[in-house]
Length: 109
Ligand code: 2BA
Image (cartoon, rainbow, N blue to C red; front, top):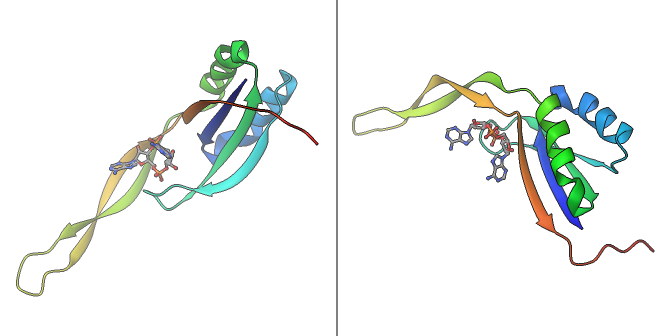
């Protein structure tokens, strides 16, 4: 058995969860925050059989879109006092970040 940890954008999550449920996957949804943008995203936990991972990846690929997002990055200011001057930076977020882990045991009590 495998556990997929899928970090997705909030904009894609409702459609993705619906697609996964329709295809028979069990899903747990967590509200999370990206360390770089400090903005909300969603992490899904999906436990499934090894042979279903390709289908799962396919659904995520089909559903989650890459988006350009503006943020600010700190640029150092010269001089004795130093300091940082924020400047705009565009980054591409997603489609999705996926981790697939092997599960030692799956127990429901
Ligand atoms: P964030 O950390 O908020 O990152 C958002 C986007 O900012 C990233 O998109 C990437 O394009 C950019 N980015 C991240 N760190 C950067 C850096 N040091 N310099 C320049 N640009 C940077 P994605 O790669 O699609 O990641 C989307 C979200 O997935 C991330 O949100 C984070 O929550 C998660 N994630 C990505 N890689 C991860 C990893 N190796 N471990 C844990 N979480 C990860």
